[in-house]
Length: 629
Image 1 (cartoon, rainbow, N blue to C red):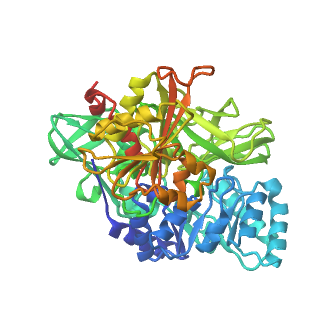
Image 2: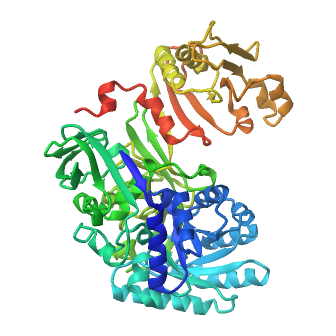
Image 3: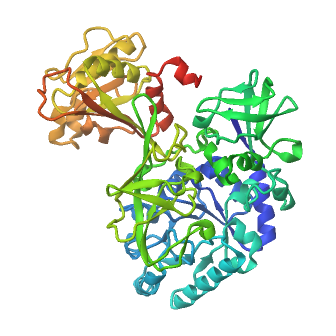
């Protein structure tokens, strides 16, 4: 599959939208630019005249800054404990949705936008907390805090509901009149185009900038976007042989049965979408267009969305993992909400792990998320979770259970791009509480995942032979400069796993514990040396660079496997972490045949999720990898 993005189309769309709405535009490039690539989208929007760029979390904003974007940036979805001083240092505005976030951001010296909930029921200061938060913002501003803006978000439930939100937002701004003049912004693409009353000082343009009708797939032919003067920026193609293309759900495609595909100028229809394969009828061969520019006679992304029973936003955003990697800098997980796809060691999806970003008490009768399809029946608490369809939770997962504090709570309201909401009643919960969506409760989870989601492998390893085989799978993915840090108690199997790494690399000499020599170097058939290190003695002072220098490691040209490797993390930019635990208590630590559990995670730019997944794929039979039924 190939995803081509037309940056010139994004630029032209932004220019057309600025002319239409008549106020400055904040171009939204969250979730890897809605699947189009964050950096290419950001650059194109600025070329089109965008006055500011918006992203969901601070990790996305910092990645853009480090990639060279110096325009004003705004972020509004924060994990607990996020370091707002990073935002202050890099001149990134932050929108706050609670008193705690307001205090933390102001104390860090960041420029603050007050985000108030006017009826969307997601993040944003709750109505019951609004007056106190505004009073505190006024106090902080008098003390020198930079309170720069006020924002909210339309629910798009109806014109009347949106106008009520405009009125509520206006009232909140009036309450904040003692603050210096604020940058006021409420409308998204849909509201900016349909509701002039919602434009205020700036509008936030997301999907429309990418050439997609923000009102949805409509008839599925993309015609309404054209009437707005918008040009689709994404084109997705694939090669077909006898009606079969080697792409599927794991590449980001939704199961759009009946969607049109253009192959060699002939029309076909999708009849099946599997994890690794798509089938069309008639069984044509050649290069096929799944969606592109309807003006050129190609199918529309709207058509794919309509066939999949969703919105075009989700269809294109899921292409983030397949779009060209242009962002240069990886997203730092410490600056973003927790988003982890856990796969088994066999590569099968197990669960999606996230965290609570906020908990707020709300009134009865509040619509939750877009369209207000779920309305609170009584005063209750809502928990905001930082996962959405950009992270693998499809919009069809509304109503599915999310486990929070050991209790399963259904997703209420529509799944958004990066958020879901739980109505938790009186269940105790706080920001930072872990949540999980298991594959059993959300079967839409597949190996497809967005670029901002960490991928981890976890599962049991029954015996020493299996541990060595896992080491072989890891070794097959290693190259010069890689470091593998093994974490686990005495007798966990660290040396056994390294033995498998050595076998995959064709290491010369016996791979054995380096305890008494601290480091062994093995020449390999693969080329780079294998450095087998015992880093145990570094645990006494992990910051002691002199001790690390004593090991005389070549971290750039060799492959390093370090037992007790945690202290090496401070010396590395990227590493693969392998945590090994005992599966049962009371087992003799010298028993190499007792079961273990293993968790594998990549850290830094050299270990993106796709590379971690490749370790699991290496253990699958060819039949499974190809997706044959």
